[in-house]
Length: 65
Image (cartoon, rainbow, N blue to C red; front, side, top):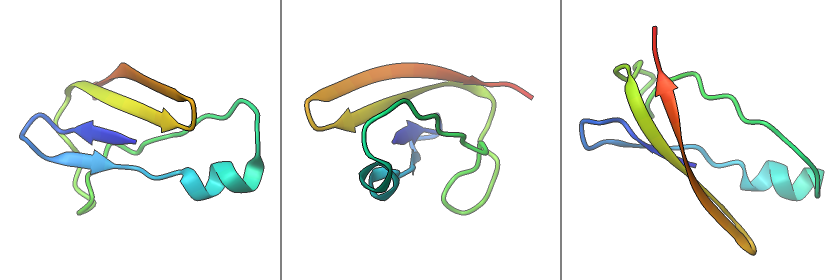
């Protein structure tokens, strides 16, 4: 999953290994609102993309503190 932090930085979360291990089903992913350097990202609206075999979707999330 990739999230643009608003300042041009992209935050990437990869869950591919977990999905392969777990198989089909409904799952959730929690993001701690931190970038790859462990810093909290600014509040705002973020778009994330889900890419899976046969499926791709873009949604938005709001970070508010």
